[in-house]
Every structure is written in structure tokens, then in C-alpha cells.
Image (spheres, rainbow, N blue to C red):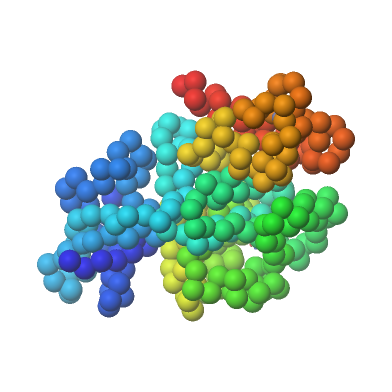
Length: 307
Ligand SMILES: Nc1nc2c(ncn2[C@@H]2O[C@H](COP(=O)(O)OP(=O)(O)OP(=O)(O)O)[C@@H](O)[C@H]2O)c(=O)[nH]1
Ligand SMILES: [Zn+2]
């Protein structure tokens, strides 16, 4: 049976690129296939590998029989549906894209993306600051340097001028890459800069709310010059999926490092006595914003656990 990769899906019709020929088929799901995705928001996501069959090559239509085992998946908690939602599967690098302004730089959002990436086996994370043609304020640069000190690669680029992009191409070569970021940071513009034929629609920033208008409606992926890139739809709120409140502390690198000095090994650094993390915030050795970002996410996950 032929195998291929999911590129795109809408209304339960999935675009599958066949491995051997590169031919593209529009496929529906047949049968019970995806037993481990029961309860999930979507059974398949870009980057998933499937086995499928078709009547004839000419029809470019077929049926998906099975989803092959995933190496990893980038998930979010879909608050409305109260379910995990798979954004993309089988990734090598998650690229968290941000901008210095318009939409504003939001480290707490980046932290959440990094947590989900940390949960994924065999996947790295990096941070991309787009729109650097408008300048990088000192406070933004300081936070970028904090991420670099934690071991996350950071690149400063501009989709508008193309600056910094060729360095990224070297990192992404022969990798499966996910672009994720708030709406309006310029994911589609970056894809246009990399691969003009992808002709992603770029939306004008909604001036009224200073938030991006939602243009990308479903993650889609394409392969270009050895880079396999998936563009996730812009999100406003992101809650990582797959981590308990009690374990979240292990996925903030700086907090995880300090944890072993806490009086209690089960310390979640909220209100326990002898907490080395809180002491580090007070003495200034741990960035207070990182700590409050952790506390905020801890509380969000705790709320969901009560549902
Ligand atoms: N100054 C500047 N503006 C940019 C740059 N990249 C994108 N923009 C602008 O930012 C706005 C949003 O860009 P998009 O590419 O649509 O953003 P997106 O992240 O794909 O948005 P969603 O589809 O909502 O997820 C557009 O008005 C772009 O022209 C850049 O490098 N510099
Ligand atoms: Zn503690």
C-alpha cells in the first residue's frame, strides 16, 4: 500500500503527498484507523505519515487506511473543545516566531511554546524575531539574550528585507520545521520570502485591536529546497498539552535547574517553605518574569485539571 505525508486538511479531506512519486491525492479517512486519537480534536495533522490507496493515479483521489506511528507531535489544549489539538506531527524543529511590536513581543507566549517543544522527543526549539527592520528595543533584546543563555538558539530576521534568513536556511536544511506564533508576527510573510510560490495570503494587521486578523485557517506544509516547513495558524492563547501542573517545573529550564535545591523534592514553587526558586527570584538570580510566566501557566493548567 502506498505511503505518504499529510500536507493539509480541511473538512476531513486530506492532501497526501505520496512518498515515491510525489504525486498529490485528496483523501478521505476510511474505517476506524486512528484508535489512539480518540477524543482528540483532529485525527491527522500536517506531517503525519499515512498509508492510503487510490483507484487510479489520474483521479488524484483516495482513502486513508492508517496513520503510521508518530515520532512526536506539537499539541495545544483547545479550550473551546476541551480537547488536545494536533498542530503538526513528526517535527525536528519548532520555530517560535515573534515580533518586536505589532503584535507586541510576548515572552509568556514564547515560554508556552517552548514548554510544548520540550515535551516532544527528538525535537529542538528555536526563537525567531521577525520584523527586525523596525528595530529591536533593549527590553526585547535583553529577553532574547536570556533565552540564548538557556540554550535556545535565537535568530533576528526580517521577512520584509530578507535579513538573517539565509542563516536560518542552513539550520532548517533537511529538517521538518514548524512555524508557530501569534497572529500577525509574519509567518506567512516569512514563507513568501522563502518560497514565493507558496503564495500564502498575508493579512493586514487589524489596527483596531492591534492584533493580527486570522488569515491562516489550518496548518499547511510544503517542502522547498530540502526544508519541510509547516505554517501553523496564528493563535492568541496557547496552553501546552501533555504536561501536568505538578510536572510543569521540569519544562522551564531555569526553574528545573534550581528545583533540586528546594527543601521538598515535590516543591512546585508556589507557596512551599524552603523554595529555592522563590529565593532565586528574590535575590535576582532568576528572572522574575520567567517565574511569573511559570506561575500563570501553572494556574491555567491547574484550572483545566479541575474540569
Ligand atoms: N515591518 C515588517 N512587517 C512585516 C514583516 N513581516 C510581516 N510583516 C507584516 O505583518 C503583517 C502580518 O503578516 P502575516 O505574514 O500575515 O502574519 P502571520 O503571522 O502569517 O499571521 P496569521 O496568518 O494571522 O497567523 C503584514 O501586514 C505584513 O506585511 C517584516 O519583516 N517587517
Ligand atoms: Zn521550590
